[in-house]
Length: 228
Image (cartoon, rainbow, N blue to C red):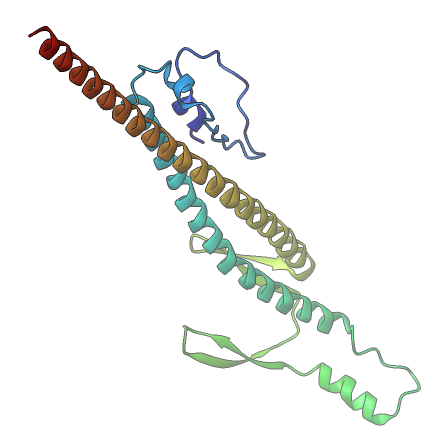
C-alpha cells in the first residue's frame, strides 16, 4: 500500500507514528494549521499542494482496484453458494436425508423410496442462453472448476467442505474490501479538504499582500506630494 501520510507531512516535522487501518492503508492527516504545515507565513504552497495531489491520486488508484475486487467478489459469491447448494443436495439425496422412511410406512412411501433411486433429471447451462437436459445417476464424486481452466474431482463430502471454506473466505474478503473502500473514500475527502483549505489560504495571503503593497504605494505617493 502507498504511504500517503509521508507525502503530506512537512519535511522539518518530526516523524510521528503513522495511523493505518487493519489492512495497512495509511490514514490521511487533516491539516488544521496550514501556515504551520508549510513552515510559516512566507512558506511555499506549490510543493505541499503537489504532494496532496499525489496522495489523492494514490488513494483513487486504490479505490479503483478495491472497487473492481468488490465487483468480482459480489459476482463470485452467488456462484459458490449455488454450487454448494447443488452439492449438498446430491449429498442429501445420496445419504437419503429428507426422505427418511419408517419401516411401517405404506406402499406409497415404498414407491417414493424406489423413485429416489432413479436417475435425477435436470438441466445444465451450456452458455448464457442455452441449457441442455441430463440425467444424474447416483454418484459420490463431483467435478469443480478451480479457475484458470482447471477442473478437479472431489468426493462429495470433500467438495462440500472445500466450497464452504471458499465461501467463508470470499465473504470475509468482501467484508474487508467494503470496509477498506469506505476508509479510503474518507481519506479522499480529507485530502480534498486539505487541498481546498491550502489553496484558499494562499489566495487570502496573496490578496493581503497585494492590499499591503497598494496601501504602501498610496502612502508613498501622498508623502511625495506633501514634500513637493
